[in-house]
Image (tube, rainbow, N blue to C red):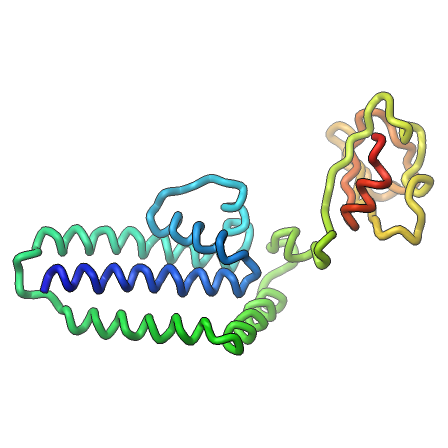
Length: 219
């Protein structure tokens, strides 16, 4: 019975991974990234990749991540306890089997296309109603189109843009916004469009990435 208990519990762990991966996908995360990060948090591996910021910077994913870390620590303790009592007959195999079955049902429900769409809409609606924009990652607030980017462009000594103003470089019809100019420790926002650019300035731009490449290809 002990070995059966271990297999059932491992099945529960696998199902928890898939359920949380599906929820992460509903928040807008790619499935491959979602599954990798779920396994990373569940096992306490702690991969500090750039992709981990997709979890940390998102309030809903961050809460799920906290659950996974705690569940992973609990699961390790359970499995170690089961192994040490492998010859005991006091396992609650049927109870844990019911739990595994319930989780499997939840997983299948989350995989139904209609449920996936409604969950995704619900999470997006909750984000809009519950969290301030400042709490959300840039990609969820500003990047609405596939080509949208927030980029930083440096003005070099030899740049042809030195001495020019931003509104002389980019027309009002262009899909491009200057958020602010970094000049040393100063951030120029109030008169950013009318400020003459100097070597060493860094422009923080928001808009179409191909247009940014085209406008500032010779910086």
